[in-house]
Image 1 (cartoon, rainbow, N blue to C red):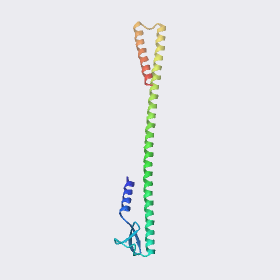
Image 2 (image 1 turned 30 degrees about the vertical axis):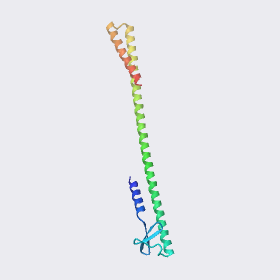
Image 3 (image 1 turned 90 degrees about the vertical axis):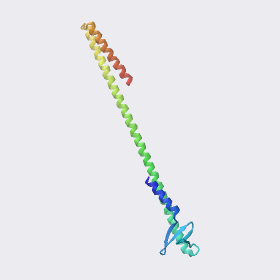
Image 4 (image 1 turned 120 degrees about the vertical axis):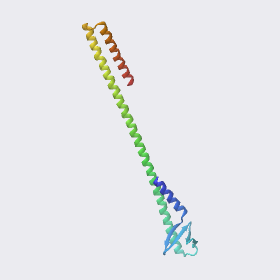
Length: 162
């Protein structure tokens, strides 16, 4: 933003105002190969050597102005590139965070599935063991089957989330 303001001011001042050149204590203004002193055209009244010197100084001043303009443009371009790089970095960081979050959720879902599967298997083993030993009444067996069905549903839900 500040570069734009500088460029605007610089361009405005270079286009509206003539170049002021100082020679022999007098300040001459040069506008398009014409030399002015106190607002009066003195191009024809100056000797060739003075005219050449003043125009040469004006030319050097013009080159400096052009170099300054180019430097400001380069600075603005660098600023824009810096902003683009920062934006790209933020985007990459955001994508990385998103990927990390997805991985964390995936790991959490896998952990839940492993836990539910382990619980189902251990409950099935215990049920089979009790059934083999004949220690289950018909009511207990119905409760165990319900419990096993609940664990099976938990495993299915966990699989869906993966």
